[in-house]
Image (cartoon, rainbow, N blue to C red; front, side):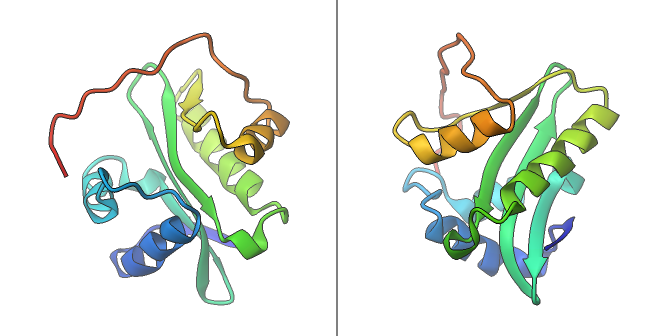
Length: 138
């Protein structure tokens, strides 16, 4: 798998990947999420390509206190081959190069397979409660 920056021509394939991975939700328009990301640290929006097909993606960012990871996705039929770990390693290096001391991410508590994946990469549950507030309805 080759890791490269997201290009606008990737949008349909990336959204289809997110849908296949169960990452989209009715209250989050993935097209708007992509458009918003392209205005902020677009170089931290990456895709994994294999045989001219997008098979993985990740969105990351750093706001000066901690890094965040969103939309890590690997095509279901290609999981377990190291693609997700490779993307996370790439993101960790990019954030470390920016001086980022810590990465946070959110995983649904019912998603035991993804929680196990992140634990294998050295991530642990933080003793914090995530809170959110919608500012712009999608």
